[in-house]
Length: 245
Ligand SMILES: [Zn+2]
Image (cartoon, rainbow, N blue to C red):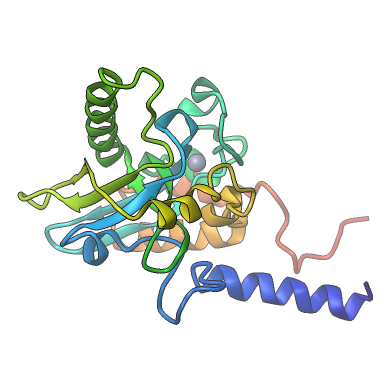
């Protein structure tokens, strides 16, 4: 591959990321399921992995829902796993030596990506869930699986159909069993264990300069939300500084 083609590919990748990774999906549809609108009336999916195989990562975000104020714009904590199966303990605490937002003490939250097959678009998509919502879905998941195991010991919800829906109080999501044609389900099951899902790309790890911008914006809105002193020290030289010889 020549340098031009390589640069073109990199540019394509950047565009893809900016679009929320909607490659191969209709205009306006992203790999991320829009929880608020798409799950309001419930939507049927096939689960492509069980909770132990859900990708977990951390984000920094801080805002006030009531007044719709954003302090720290949501971004992935650089001290997060790049793939499934990581050790929780290794990433449980902030790591100021690899992540500027950890260093600046920005609020840090645990998130999960749940891989599902979307029957409407006939491909995989992701439910990006806060810890609280993931916990609720896991509760439902365990109840359903436990009930089914009474009749079939080896039953698993992985590869089966579920309805995921906003709860009636609007505060979280529920997971219940659902039905679909066997033939359609087989199509979905081919995506179990697919290597098409690149979690680290979906998590969109940003570079330090981007993160610094978010933190500076947060400090402008309310300087109690981040430790501004941490921003003064640089981890890495910015791109446009001449090397010192
Ligand atoms: Zn961090």
